[in-house]
Image (cartoon, rainbow, N blue to C red; front, side, top):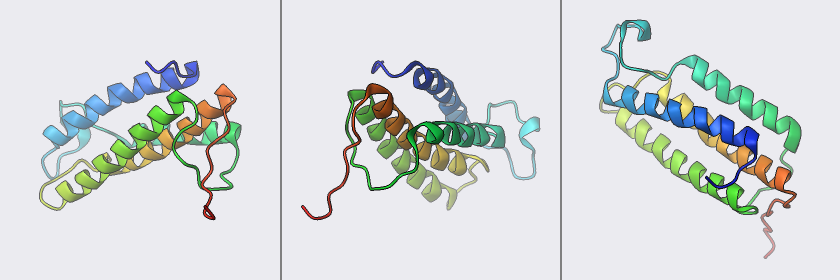
Length: 141
């Protein structure tokens, strides 16, 4: 909805669907000892985590290596992706806390971790595609 690059819009549509899997996974994790294949509720699987890692790698080829700390911002779509990243990191912290008290699917925390990294790289990609310079942190100011 932020007018993102088509490649990102397509990836985010898939991710949004997977987040519903993640919600189902948290609401009804498989009982201990049962495999994901035995559970009827959609679950986050290692293939979802691997897909995020592939997306990160593919986008990093375009934006290049990180050479400085980046501030959130730039193009409006990139800023929205940075906000989504912050929310995702918070969700990851809460999932870790939850995992101390009750079972959480094996791939939930890795997925959230990789998703926050993917959102960061997506923000960099959006700025790149929009021709907007990344806002860099200036430690001397």
